[in-house]
Amino acid sequence: MQASPAGAQGIEAARAAYAEGRFVEAAALGEALGTSEGYALAAESLAIHGYYIAAEDEQPELFAHAIRAADEAIRLDPESAEAHFQSAHAIGREAQTVSVMEALNRGYARRTREAAEEALRLDPEMAEAHLTLASWHAEIVNKMGGLVARVTYRATRRNALDYYEKALERAPDEKTVYLEYSNGLLLLGRNRNREQARELLSRGLGIPPGDAYDRIIHDLMAERLAALDDS
Image (cartoon, rainbow, N blue to C red; front, side, top):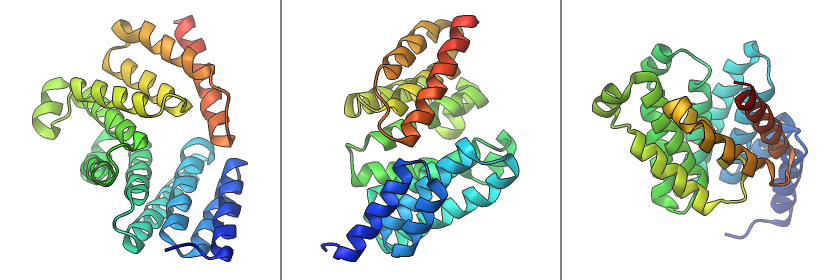
């Protein structure tokens, strides 16, 4: 169904706010549209603001709001790969801010994987979903150890690397792919993967930032690269 002129203008206004780094405003504008696309953008905006910008005591409500927005995006369009991906994104970001035991008790590992896999079922070429699954495998292996991760969650180092490569193949100009890939490599073996992580960060820094989120990622990559060089 083709969007109405008013709806098209509304989503463009939300996207403009997102691009300029006004993430909370972008979320409000997206939700006001009452569409799956709008709620998905709201979930993304709130997850980014919560993870990278908000104070620690603000994070729980922001992530809960992001998850609710993603759930509504899925309810409105169950066949939207973007909606399922934003669910994985929001749950995954919250999981990264709590303890391992709390994340396990809340079922975050299972929920993140299921949402990302559903996004890939609907859109096998979605680079972001490949990236999410790559980081899922890397983080589970890092936190649980190779044997427990494989037996309990079917998470493996090989799967992490395969998904990272698939993400890079599909989005070679996306800065976040280089940051997350380098992070994953360091989780899987800081000493043996240090040089490859450094190379990925250097390549990612060479891509011009396209919007406010890219600028956040750019600054993080610069910090990580400097830390690698100093260690």
